[in-house]
Length: 374
Image 1 (tube, helix red, strand yellow):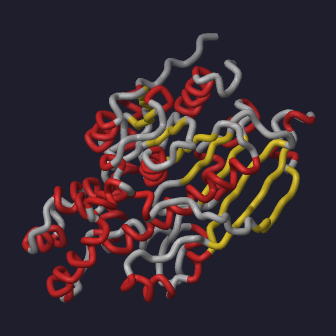
Image 2 (spheres, helix red, strand yellow; image 1 turned 45 degrees about the vertical axis):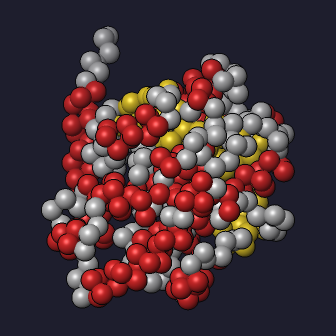
């Protein structure tokens, strides 16, 4: 019998764009609707408060506000158990492992004193959450995962990134970080996970990325204290942006794999609001695409020189992605001096045939001699 013909990649990409249209509609509803009459009166005050984030000395030395905690906070075990039988692909000591949920008190404190009152209303943000699949014996390498906007539950991303493949086939220890305002860290004030970050509240978004960077760099210290093997980061969408940022801040990362990453979060929101009344109001106040990006420059990878070596950077994009377009990712690829780049047929919301990029991750890590070639 003959195998059925493969569906051409362009048809797969076309089929995924409908899901992206639904996601874009949801984003526009959340981000581009603001009927507040205070927008114009509060703009000048907001611009004044934003100056602390675009101080040239801070942009040149982000370590001043986004460093790892020292000393490290206590890492609390919320749950620890052996991997369940259904999680094991091969029975045997080599394949056994530990399934953990960990948390710790965040070392972050608001940079903007005026934001402190709002932050105090979100007790869910005070503890950072970390999940892990660890081998009984320390693995030869570790990957730290983080997620995209609006999601965050560990069980979803185990499937998205094929954590059993990373753990069993590649032999990695796998950690997963949940970003502020998502999943278990969603404040009661938010209707859905991720509604409050990232958002068009320029102050809160800057603060949330500062918190994210501090927590992730603290987690890097914690992981390396457990196992000093090479450690890298991988994340999708918002997680891809975050991974690219951390690759620009922390030279302890051995590799980085941003998936569907925007180079500038400001550019993405601006470009998808081209006919929104809110953008017209912002433009009338003197906002522009370049100025918007400038206000969020502290956490944009375009602001910083990557610290992960060129050969250890892999960008992954979707042929059908209409949320983070080719232009949005191209800026990062160029800024990073055109490193290795892999495209799979799927889109942003529906990552059809993502198994292709999973296998590319395996090839990439094998080329770096971090995992056996299979």
